[in-house]
Structures are given as C-alpha cells and as structure tokens.
Length: 262
Image (tube, one colour):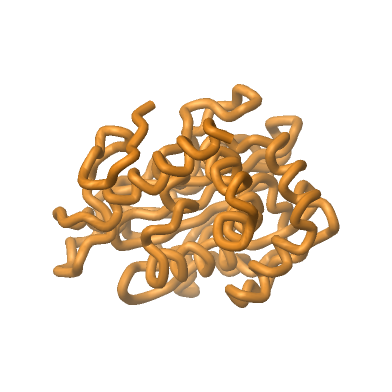
C-alpha cells in the first residue's frame, strides 16, 4: 500500500515536467507516399497527429491488430480515474514496467475497464475480448486516445508513467524501440508478443505531437519502418504553449510535494 502510494505520488510529480514552461521541441515530419498517406510497408501501420493541427497515417492505420501491452493504457485510464485508491499506483507501475501480473489483477478486478475507455474516447477500431492480452486496437485509436489525453488531461498519471518508463520491462524486455526513437519524444508505451518476434508496437507523445506504430515483425523492424517514414530533419517549431520541457524524468523535481526519485 505504501509502495503504490509512493509510485503514484512520484508519477504525479513527474507530470510537473508536462505542465511547466519551456521551449517546444519540433514535431517529426512524416514522409507522404504517392497517395498522400504516410509511406510504410504493408506489414506496418503508423498514425501521427501534430498539435495543434493535422492528422495523417498509413493507408492501413484503421486495421484492428493485436493490441499487446498498448491496451494497458486503456486499462490504466479507467483505474487511475475510477479505481480504488490502492490500485492507482499499481496502474502507474503497470505502464512504466509493462507488468503483465499487475494487468492480470487489474483487468480481473475491473472487467469493464477497457470497454469503458473505448466508449469514452470513441475508439473506433478497438475491441475488448474479456482478457486484456487478446484485445485488438489500431494506431489510429492509439493516437486518438493520447491526443485527447494531452489536450484535456495533461496532468494524467498515465502520461506521467509513459514519461518515466523503465529501461527494461517487468519481464526484462528492453523498452527502447519504435516511435520512442523519434526526436522530441517524451513518453512512450511499448507492446510485443510473447515470442518477441511476431509483432511489436509503440505509442509516443512529444511536446507538440503524438505518434503510434505497429508491425508484424521484430522490434528492430518496427524501428526501421518508423525511421524510414519520417524525414531526417524535424518540422520547424511552431509558437505554441508546450506540454513538456525537454527534460528526462526523474530529473524534474519542480514544485510538487511528495516527489520520489528513482
């Protein structure tokens, strides 16, 4: 109980980084294909939102694919807002560590959580299955969810958890691939299949953009497809109020009592 309370307090404190003033990082620039959609192999889907402004994606961005651990975002969304106090810190750690054991427990305790998030956020390609590990979603829905959170609830512990993710997941898998490698990314949630090869996904946000990608293949393949879909140079910065400063948690210790480092 004490441990989860400390985790939750730390996550809330880390979101001072999101709410504080600082220079905006420029959003990456998607490379359009001949039809105007983002260019990527058919095995990969990508969706991108520039804040405030345009939205684009691959032609297949609405395909509902295995959600893997990305669906933990939708589960955590419900728990941190509507769950029992003792479960909220666990939901934050579930995101930071992509912890399946926590996900099993929370989805069992809150069986309608994912479906509630689907309905609330208008996720058009996401389907619950009675078990979080077999739910499906699309990159279109991933960015819809994150864009809505950044616009309406930038202090969310879910975003804080993404911004303070562990280098290794609870099962020891590296959390360092896909959209997290794009310049300006501040927070990411990753997903992968149990065999570590069949499929991978990631969803990220920066100070002025949201991006998600999913592929049938390895983490390296996802990273390569994402890198090839964006220009080497980011778009010119826009004069907007930034959502985040370019700092890396847990270095931020500004102004919120109860911060726990590490």
